[in-house]
Structure formats: structure tokens, C-alpha cells
Length: 422
Image (tube, rainbow, N blue to C red):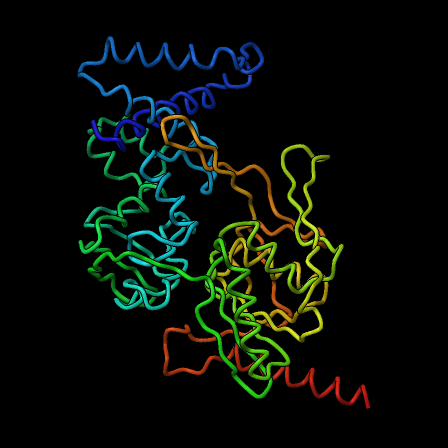
């Protein structure tokens, strides 16, 4: 029994029961009569596992059976950002936040139920092979990533469909996708890419050891105007940002374009510290609100806002997510920057990693982000002050209209400030 099959069975069982209860009008009555207490959890799971082990028609792997139950438990939350993570995948996730891992150099996520490229890392194998932000990964090594709804799967089983056939119709989970895309350095993996207006095509990419720096483009783009691109918010991003700013100041920078396009986020602490570079002390950067309305956690600027006097333009697009939206939302609410580009992704929830004794873990949504003005970010995003559409950045022959607008705005600010002073 495969790992996906074991948790698939658990999910289908849960979905079948829930569907039957709802159709029979029994769910409310059952809830009113029955309450499962925390002290009953281990015994109940153990009873089910023993029942399967002792009576199922074939021998089963207890470890896979238990993990299947945990997958199904988190799946029932219907939250694409919460997941149970097996030991190997959990270790890979920890390596990812530290900036070194083996893979394709690609950031992926689930969007509208599809496995989607959030950002190919510049200069890494995926980008070199032609993968672009917004591409849909339809297959990995020939196996489809998209699938049918679990309730539809239940209906097909009731109609007499074979278990193995239905299992193949289910979509991949994000942790499974990450695990399948990664592998030994030097080995190839083939992905099938779907792109709007084009036929799906296969791309074979050789895995490499990926070393990542959050700051990967630093330059003067016009007289007195610096440019810094942040690809994500990993450990050490503030040190890299400060070094980049110091270098540009030495080269005559008087205003800055901070590029957060295609930046999928990363560590909350890193995003907060980046925003803190540009926001006056005592100002709220982001607040996090969970289930209990009276429990609000705020992160407040406290680093002396060393760069708050520098005119700042921030570039965002539809693939700027999570930490990028925290930074852009805070700078926008406090009038510390002009936000330019397209409305952001809308991933504004907080996930905590909870480790377990066997090396596995749980990534769980515990609260949601709110901007300083109280704007919710999740599923809404940040709307730029100046909306500018443009061709993809990877199309080198086309002009970067968003960056051009940012430069023009910063020039206008400089002219206005000069006239105002005079």
C-alpha cells in the first residue's frame, strides 16, 4: 500500500461518512449528542488502527496507516497552507528556510487548485530551462498533479469504480510535490508545463544543489536612483539588504526602488525586519489575529528607521506573497513608499511549524495577517498606489514598464522636494 493510497483511503472514509450524515440530516443531531474529548483521541485512533490491522483483507504498514490518518485529519481543514509533513519533507523544509537545498530552483504553491510556479529563482535550473512564474505544473515525471474533488471520488467508488483507478484521479498535495521535485543532485526530473495560450509541453531539468541569496540584483538604474531586488525573506536578508544599501549610497544613491515582484515570502521575522528599515519607531508593521478576537499580536518598528528619509518605490505583482505583502502593506499604510505594479497574491495567513518526536511535523495556519490600518491580506492582497501592467520580466526584449514608472515617480519626488525647499 503506497503512502498516498493509505491517506487517500482515510480521506475517502471521512468524506463518505460526512457526506452521508449531511445528506441524511444526521450531522447536527450527532453533534448535539456526541462530544469527543481530548483524552479520548489516542484511544479512538488506536481502536481504528487495530481494527484495520486485525481485520483488513491484506497486511498493512502501521506507520503508513498512522500517517494516513494524520494526512486526512489536516485535509479536513480545507486549508491549502496547512499540512502534515513526513520526516524527510520536514527536514527539506528546514533546509529551505536556511538557504541551501537540492532541487530545481523553483518556488511553487497551490493556486485555484493547481500546482503553480510562484517564482523560478534567477540563474537556477528551472529558469534556465524556460520555466516562468504563473506556469501550471500539470505533471511530475508523467504523473498528473491536478485531480478530482474528494466527494466526487466517493461518488465514483459508490458507482463501482476501482480503488486504484480513482486514486490516480486525486491531485497531488503541496508537500508531496516538493518531495517529488527534489532529489539527488545530478538526476533529471521531467515536468509538464501548462501556460496560457500555449499547448502543454514537457521540460526536463537536472537537479542541482541550490544556494540562495535573498538579495540578487543591486545597481544604480538612473542618476541617484538605486535598485534592489529581494527574491525572498530568508535568514540573513537584513544583513544582505544593509550591505546592498551601503554599497549604493557609496555610489551616489539618493532614492531607492525595492523590487518584491515574484517574491513568495519566507520567514515572518525577516519580513518584519526589512520593513523596520523604512518605518519610524513605534509604528505597527503587522498584526496577527487568530481564533480568539482578543488575542492580537503586533510587531512594532524599533530599529531606528535608518532609511526612512530616503524616497522609496516598491514594485509588486500578482506573485508577491506573504512576507512581500506584509512589507508592502506596512509601507503603504504609513506613507513610507509608493507601491507600484499589480495587486499581490493574497497569502496573508500565519503558519507555525510544530515538530514531532519521529521527525515529522505539522504546518498549521494559526492566525491571519492584518496591515497597520487593519486591512486583511489573506485572499485580498495589496492593491498598488499606481497599477501598471507589463510583460513578464523574463522576456528580456521587452521594456520593464513598472520599473520605468518607479524611476519616473522618484524623479518627480526629487524635483518636487527641490522646488519645495527653494
